[in-house]
Image (cartoon, rainbow, N blue to C red; front, side):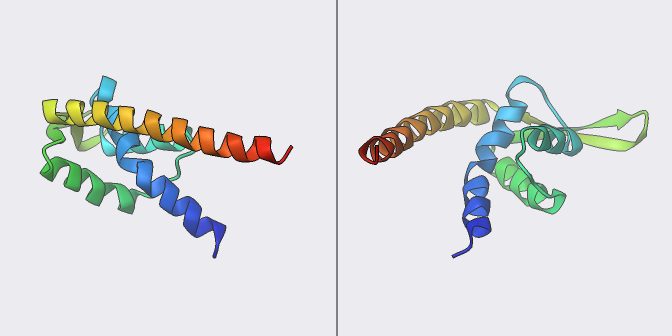
Length: 114
């Protein structure tokens, strides 16, 4: 079993949560979303994000609008819908519970080895 595969699966599992979180405070277009993710060391290729954004839009968690750009073609800005905001709140709670559970388990293991 390769560690890279496991790491990729872990990142993939939280990518939706990260994208919704990026859009929580402001609308953004794909390049801005990718920059936010990369700045946080969440490595994502452009080809991965488009199907995910489409899936989130089809689930009515995101909406988008086209906006003219002074430096090229119009940009598609994504924003959270009300349903998306509620979904993000649920994910945040779930993430906190999961973090707490993993910390409890891994700390128990670490304490048992001392």
